[in-house]
Length: 266
Ligand code: PGA
Image (cartoon, rainbow, N blue to C red; front, top):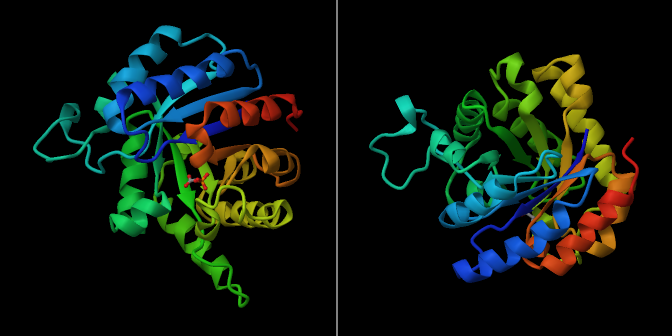
């Protein structure tokens, strides 16, 4: 399987012109890579801009895909209805969106998304045929190991009742909240991420099946920069990265892509 490098642009950039520039800058490198699938997740308002361009260049090697940062949890018939401000899975698909991020800690915190809402969103997205990047991660790494219980609860509640046939479209992103947005200065240590990845696989055993728990891709996110990316990809037992800040700087992001391309997949 290809390694996944996901760009989470969050509420950036400010202008369509910048979005086009960043997108173009990344795409040029991304389409040339063989071992990586690059996924760009722009704000909804830029999806048409990058979606149409992305569609035109969508290449057979599947090295480049579009993702969304959220979706609505209800799936009304034909993907439309009276839900002011919301975007349906069906609408996303019309823009060639293949992936959707669900459960990001910033949405849990600022928008009050609960495990139950996240579970509904995951089910809706999977049913519509989207691939889900399901984010989990603790607020702090407290010494009494409460954080393990916290992540366990997020995984179990988020994946409650997911039909087996959809498990192949599920990706888990481990993003410790304390490591997000620190631009490299506070990223987790690869050996600690590895422990967490193994732990998440054990939890997945409780809510999925043996094969899925073994092979489901797990990404790491939180202050990934070119300097630490190689060590994560080599030593943390992960299948890819979810990148915020650095995904808005094509030069740095492309460097991470090139680093990922040269590391052998296990
Ligand atoms: P960061 O964000 O790379 O800026 O830490 C990661 C994320 O929140 O997905």
